[in-house]
Length: 442
Image (cartoon, rainbow, N blue to C red; front, side, top):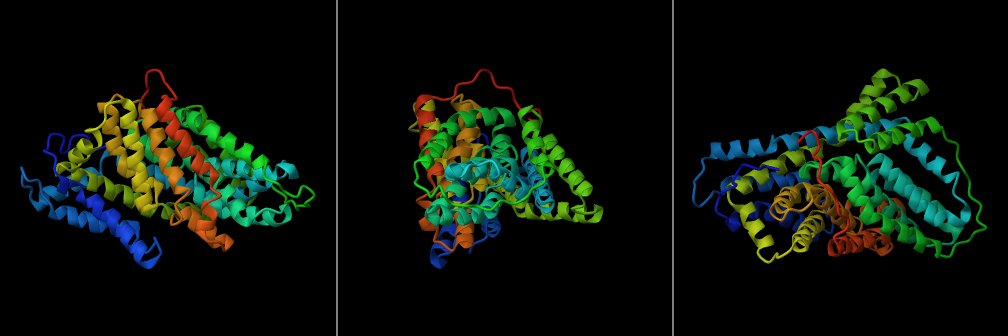
């Protein structure tokens, strides 16, 4: 991501300590309070950045002004700024679709066509579609968890199972959606097109999704259950269908989000869901939802630049690669790094943004296909994110359902399966691709 800063600096362990401090702050605060939201991610990053400014390179002393300049150049790097813009646009689209009722309409539309005997596999597929269209696992969990809870009792299945199914579907879309934070972070840090990453990713996770559906068919339910159905306006589903179509046709992510925002705003005005001032406030609300994540990206960019200038990134690259003797070893290192960061921060987007520069360097050194590295970053971060009991997804589901996150995590079968299939993809070198076409923004 930050290619020129510190490229020839001698490696030293102290250079990597800012990110270690960040991880320690999050884990210790969460362990002491039994609440992993105690230490806000952005606060922990600013503390780590302040600590980083106190360090120096043992071969070349930098003044405070020089260090601040390196930090600002890192945070203002082209890829980081583009990432911020995309995050903000995604927030605007998400807010507009909620306010026009598109999310609820999509859920009701999908439920109309699912036979009672197929409701558990159908619940998973519905959650997959909603999260894929919306680009957010948290939004999907908020919308679909009450549906899952409502289905559990009449179908005679446990509530933790129903909630675990929803989380699995939510992580499917979080991993694959063209406009999810993780997809945006993975494609931008590795410099690949949305559709290229999607193809590589889909080949790996599709068997996991199909196996999940197959398993759910064998869960015993009460097929005589009578379920109520709600009305819906099919036009409200159109923004989701448009962004999926545009992304599949190869539109750039900025264009995809632009189409989504314009279509959602137009439908909202036509249907009377809001007037122009309310529409603008809805857009602003969505932008506000993503401001913290945008700031996180900026600070991480600056932090990575300082760690490179101090030789920390060179040290980490050496540690990751000194025992690597094959392409598979390099890919396992990438998978292990992003998994560790996700388990530490309980945030898959931050894990990808943090691991992205190292993954890109490893890809160049070992001639890995960037589409595979982008996919591995997304698969392993989303897999663990759907399992950690202190992650936002399970905590949100637990709050809605009144269950313990630990009760739910044992039923999150799809996240478990994508981790297994991710390892299988590394072992079998699946998928294989021809020459790479880079994204036009690189």
